Image (cartoon, rainbow, N blue to C red; front, side, top):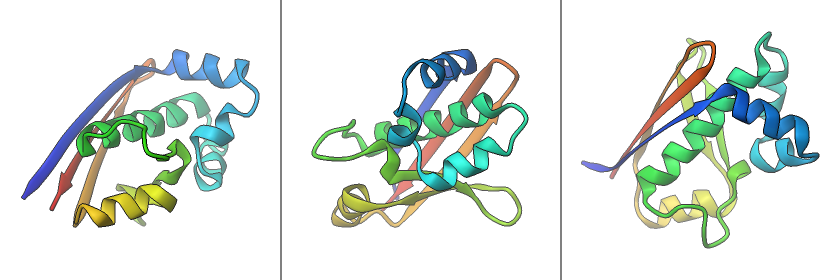
Length: 124
């Protein structure tokens, strides 16, 4: 059963500027694994923006926003062996999702040069 659906769209340039102008923001928003992945890409900002959008879409889907100690860097967007994006949770965010009996999280990312979009579907 679908518990929630979230979507987010963002301009790549917005994330690029924020990361350039705010020391330590990258580590606050992204996991070490996400940073390592994005830093290997030619258009790093596009990949950071896609992951940021997925985190925002995830929060919309669970219906809480960033409260009660949930952290951006507790939501990791990774890929399976075929490249399909996945969401992996850590810390309080993982515990919260377990408490509300979430059984599955689906994520889809799309990007063009200047824009990225993410959709998250959460099932119980």
